[in-house]
Amino acid sequence: MKILVAPNSFKGSLSASQAAAAIARGVREALPDAEVVEIPVADGGEGTVEALVSARKGAYHSVQVQGPLGDPVQAVFGMIDEGRTGVVELASASGLTLIPLERRDPRKTSTYGFGQLLEAVRRHEVASIIAGIGGSATNDGGAGMAQALGYRLLDARGRELSRGGAALAELERIDASGFDQAWRSVSVMVACDVTNPLTGPQGASYIYGPQKGADPEAVRELDRALARLAEVIERDLGKKVADVPGAGAAGGAGAGLIAFLDAKLVPGAPLVVDASGFDTALPGAGLVITGEGRVDAQTAYGKAPGEVAKRAMQASIPTLLIAGSKGSGWESLSSLGVTSVVTLAEEGDPEGHNLQVLMRDAAQELTRAAARAVRQML
Image (cartoon, rainbow, N blue to C red):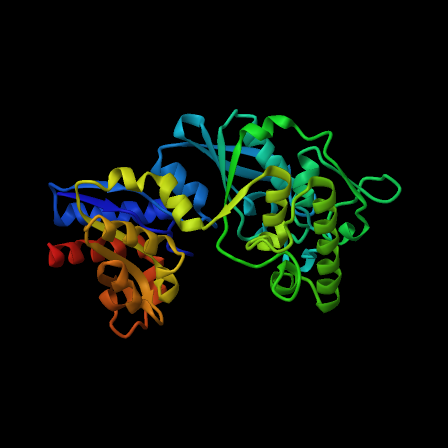
């Protein structure tokens, strides 16, 4: 029997590939003769590079770039499809976790390092790039990225703008003459699961600025600066980005990727599951096993396990979901063809008192839960 094991990461405990390996061990324990295929998946945020490199037997590379405040950081990217596709995460170069709480200031933080990371990938002569953009420390509309790629962002005196979201208030002109036209042959797909516009009450600054260190005054300042960026982009590059759903993602990096790299913003889970090779491996399977740390209503809408279950259901293949715990609305997964939901909390402790202990030993618990569940189902 062929069984596909395609979990998301169990945040704080296991990466997607570690979870897949643990579940696979349980399957083989219960069914020694089973053909087990491991395909780690992700939603497009943290863990996307790791999941795709693992699923597609790709390769990791690293490059030194400038972090959100200019400090050097090592950013990791992946190469899959025999080097034709690069996979990056904005957070590895311009992420919130790269700077301590007391230094966070989205008026100053920049996506310059993300631009350096993208350029490093392009120089591998890829045909396409998949970019996850969650977890940014920035609110510069992708302006720093553009500067790293050769665009010049100039003020009224023709001087290059300093980095950071606040400086965009002084933007007068975008000079694209230094941008490498080799980018035009690279398809950039951006995993984006938010629909926020660039500016306004639901925009990047108001919704996400505070968690990056912006006080109310800074939020208003940054919103005005992004509005100015959108005006100049429309005039100088001929692209209307302000109201595009998802333009406000990652501090407006969604808008910047559209404007400067002709990128397409697409839902993250379908993009990553497509790239994982899941559909190619699915035919002939008798069971699909997926999972994540906590299963709830959101799992069915936009999360990788929900996407996996939906595709299995379309192929009339049952799905088992293993999670650390259940949250409100988990029952909605039955509409996606999830036959059974097993949680580590229920399996190891019906009262859920020792969930933290269970998650600390998540690999071992996943293996046990998978073995028990497969025996019961099959």
